[in-house]
Length: 268
Image 1 (cartoon, rainbow, N blue to C red):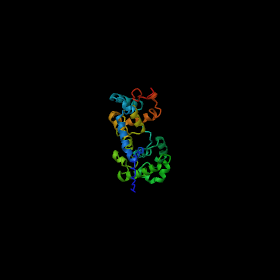
Image 2: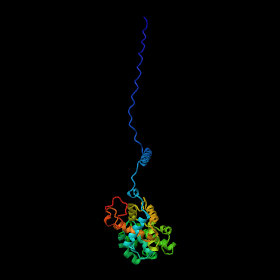
Image 3: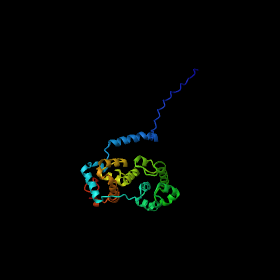
C-alpha cells in the first residue's frame, strides 16, 4: 500500500502589523532652547510697538531751552532735599538714600550728623551704634557696614576728604555712579546728571531723553541740555518728577511744560 505523504499547507504570510500612532514627543528642556530662539526671531520680524516717547519726533534745541528756562524762572536756586553739613555727610546721606526716601533718611541723620560729621567720628561711633541711628532706613545693616567701610577708606586713601573724581567716589563701599554724580554736583559744582527713578521717568515720559537704562538717560540729557542749565538740571528734573510728573497720576494740569511734553497720555 502506497504511503501517503501529506504536504503541510503553506502558511499565510503574516499581515504586517499596523504601526501604532506615536504621540509627538514633547520637547525637552534642552530642545526648548532652539524653539525659544526661533520664537524670538519671528517676534523680531513683527513690528514692535516702541515706548510712546520714542515714537514721537525728537525735541528741538529751542524747545529744550524753553523747558529749562521755565524751570529756572520758577525755581532759580533748586536745592537737593537730603540734609547734610559737608561733602562727607552728603556722601553718607546719598549712600543711605538707596531704596529709601529723602525724608526717611533726613529723619535718621539729623541726630547722627550731630555726633558723626567726619570719617573719624563715624569710625569712633562704630557700626553697632550707627545701626541704632539708621535702623528706620531700609537695608540699614548693610548700609551701616558700608558707611563704616567707606569712612575707613577715606581716612586710609584720601586723607579723610571726599575725593573729587567719579572713579574715586565709585571706589568707595556703597557708592555707585548716581552717588558720585550727586556728590560731584552738590558738593563740588560739577555739571553732572544724577539719574534716579524720577529723572528716569521724566526723561522717558516727556521724550527729552528716552533710554532703557539710567546711563542712557543720563548721557541723553547731558547731550541735549544747554551747559548754562546743567548745574541745576538734575534738581529741576527730580523735583518735577517727585511733585508734578508723578508715576501713577501725573499732574498734567499744573505742569510747567505740558504744552511741550510729548507724552500721548497727558491729560491736558
